[in-house]
Length: 158
Length: 158
Image (cartoon, rainbow over all chains, first blue to last red; front, top):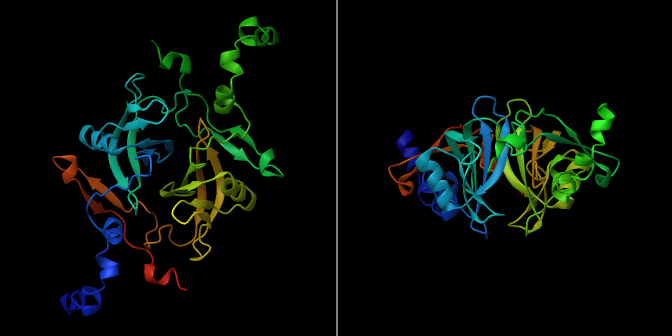
């Protein structure tokens, strides 16, 4: 009876629902990344153990492929216009344990094992400040919520 | 002695280190969002309790201000070109418990209480598939890691 239900005309002929590119991308099993107008997707690195969000950055298609192939988080630097293997200079690499993609395949979440500090400012996570709302948005302030883990002066030695 | 150290010439005149916009933005306590060329910043919603990443989307300055003012996650829809109070149609709102900003202030993490499902496809999180690496990047496949929580057909009734 279940197989009959699966093959019901409603299901077989629901072309909009099951056959469009969008549905395939959202509910299928093919990796079919959707890049933005700059050719990028958003990448969120979270600590595999604590689940803390460590950083948010961008990848292009090749950076994602490198990340998948090497198991090391590799980004595309918008400001420098080049690949960027996280930790290449600092040693603070991110070993990818699991890579998740979102519904419309324009963002990934990486569960990583972070060596050292994710943030170039020496904090474990780049999200070391919270927004404390003021009376108006313009008067909102930031408050530090993390302690520095590493002296940033020691991270990038030339 | 400490006050003398604070006023040492090295500190007072390290203009590059302490006075530049960048350092202020990265290590100061003023909310000074850095928008991309499209006028947007990245917003990551995580479950305040489980820390699970629920979704990744975008905000413009006004959407961030609305989020701060109302305590309800408000995004800017790139595809529809309009504000989007999460859950406005579906009831699946996100009550913001804490709002964190990253080092260069171009991304925020929102710790939210999610009503219902974050994803329009009926999953608790938009990140319901993981990438299973193949021999080559092109052969990577997706595998579902979450069960649907809500029938998506019932979420958006007109």
